[in-house]
Length: 266
Image (cartoon, rainbow, N blue to C red):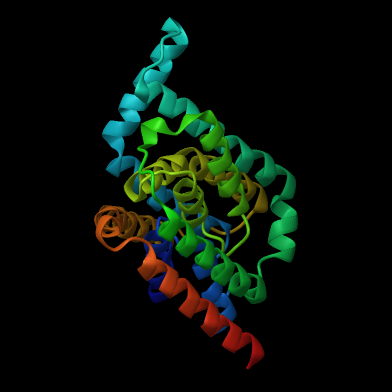
């Protein structure tokens, strides 16, 4: 890849990883629409690492508090709000781990197409719109409970299908279960940490066994651009949704889906 492609793909990853519009779909589209070659495993690891570092940096205080409380709960057997939240995040990660291990190859073989992306972009966009309009209760993330956490985790596992959007699926499920917009987004972001870390480890393992030539300069640039874009995205997304809700992202998904359908039937 040349420098322009590295910057564009890293920006796409950073800006779309935490928005409910599907980063995986947007990373596939340049190859589908512009004829770019697949960016490869090493670049996927780099840009995912950049966005992972961004969410860890942004929520560093919350994550440290949760980790401290969680380890303390194991020793003392006493639970606090932070330790419960940590346990719920762990529980919500399990469905994605199970389905990721069992269906990863099948999904990558059969679902990485523009037709699938178009369908999931529209369908899950409409589900997000419905969930946002029906949201009433306004629970915070400390009131999730293990049952709701498991349901949101199942929604996260569905996002292995390109075009679904991990944050879109989890925010949609959280809104349906009564969380406020801000709490749904924060819970989704916190859920991304173990999943992104696990995915990075797995892809790195595949990379090391593939014998692929690594362009370290491109990877370094990809990590930096993805990190900056993702950090800015998280900050402003949390501010925007309290005032505007999910409607702008629903409109974007429907417009993108319409364009993809036009490309398919052209």
